[in-house]
Length: 236
Ligand SMILES: [Zn+2]
Ligand SMILES: [Zn+2]
Image 1 (cartoon, rainbow, N blue to C red):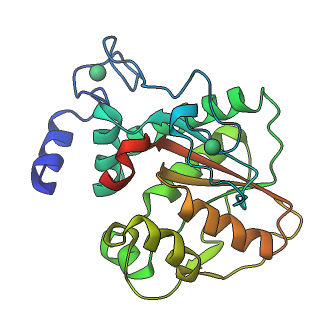
Image 2: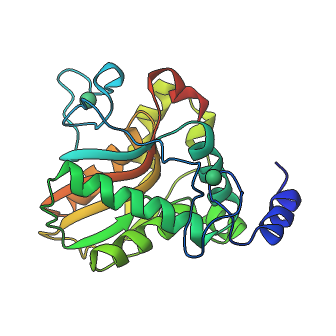
């Protein structure tokens, strides 16, 4: 959908269902017919994917302690996330953040022990072109909901403006750590909740978690609005 059409629709439906655009009851984010497409059932305790779609690699431990994805990256969830990439739609961000907090509470059985929330950064060129980072919007809403401090831009993205879409799976894994540099070391001993919009192979989250661990973080849990399934990793 073009940006102009998207803006036009959001003007027409300023408070419609964030999943389908239909009318919603006041203060609701989704209509009575839509259901959040939640990741549930038997999940990998490390990467948070359904066991058939586990992306953990033997002998390759993650830098994060655990990853949790709230929704499946498909259909209406995919549309909502694409919209959030194009426009800073706060109703979509709040809906997704609510789902993320639900999934987090479920995964940790209510034991939410973090010192701060931060997000996966985007390249500064991309940030200035787009004007916002959707992961930052989600992190802000998650932090608000959990009454935790949100530390923005703990990490600065460095390196060439080659983003992961242009890389193959192997390139993504190999190049991700080089794209980030440590910017602010306010993380020593901190238990960090690291937020992003989508988890595909987990390589970007792993790279960000590794830098935080190297910076002295005590632990990192990766929380994403959506996770791809096995056969979709290359479609993001
Ligand atoms: Zn709907
Ligand atoms: Zn796994």
